[in-house]
Image (cartoon, rainbow, N blue to C red; front, side, top):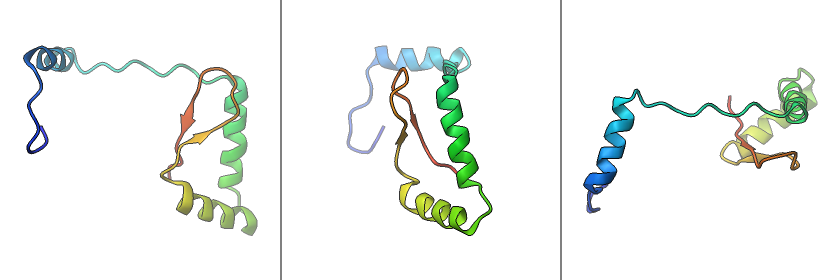
Length: 85
């Protein structure tokens, strides 16, 4: 626990302990809609482009947006993405 903060209760501790004992399962992400996959591929191709314009923009965008969440137009459930290098 963070310094100066109260410990979690026994019930909450048991929930975490059971989760760890079960192998720390994580629910898989739902597959992306085909429209979203197409949009992501378009942007990935642009960010990984070889022209000077694409390389300059990719560098600028990464330096200024790498901590931001990226959201595409709504096409189903809200989904946010992050830039990674």
